[in-house]
Image (cartoon, rainbow, N blue to C red):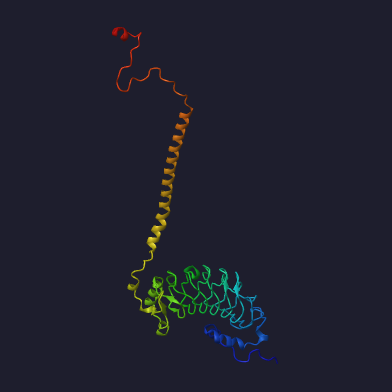
Length: 334
């Protein structure tokens, strides 16, 4: 009689999909290597359990394993050595819903690394070495609900990097190098209600205005807000982010509204074209005047010299010149 492949009853599929990462790791450890590794829907180096979970944790992998299946629902790649994610790193895993890439020393994510993962709901990139994210990195992840970038080296996070994530509810940014959040970043996340920010060197200034406005509309738990402090430039004093009202930023320049931006974009090119046309007209006029002057000088230089006048002008003082002896006037005088 063949021995069973499982040492304990299989957990329900729903429990696997809803349980946190540590529980998933424990469940994956109960799978029998002979019954899961090397299966058609499982990467060869990983351990898989029914329900679409592949555990590839702590295997010293330097790249995403090959052989990812469309049936895969969760992929654990934490505690490996995946330093970079190339384009199409998860090709074939279009049904993936959870992806764990914690503690890989990851420092580079190609803008097309997550292409094809339209069903992904949870992405954990925490405890890596990311310093920047290219625009459009997370744009394909329209179903994403939970994103962790905690414990990296992010100095800035632009709205174009996240893109529009309409279902994102939780964003973890703690323990980075962020001094402010770019305007418009949080405005593109309409479903966001959990934001983890502690452990960043926030700078007290006008750049903090969008974040403070969001915090007033979405109060965080006291355990989170108590650690949200900013430092004043040139000082050693700290202030809580929740202490800043909108009036505290009255001296700051107001960002342009969408209507104003539309006017600028519409009038700007038109005014440039008008200015360019005026410059062309003035330049053409000046060039024509100079050409006319050159032609006059050239014509004067080519004109023959004027013959001398045989009748000299009378005395400028009005005295009459001596009469010609043969003239009638001289005869009359005689």
